[in-house]
Image: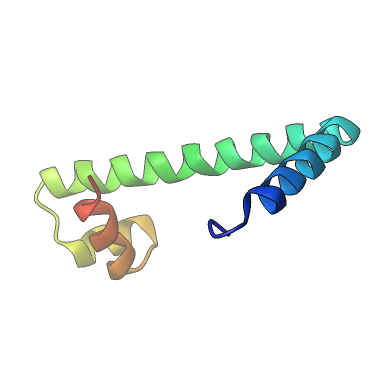
Length: 79
């Protein structure tokens, strides 16, 4: 999407701006859902890091949080 011409980018931005003006409730709902999901994810990442500091293995953390070992690995290596 980054390879749009200047004219196409302007057209897209104008369309998005108009759409947002016509659908303010959908925009509110989108942002609410987005930040709620972010908050949940953030709390799981912090919980995984706390459990790691307590000495649990990635498998134990995965079992504790009911997520995959790969997800635990991604959370612990995220900076």
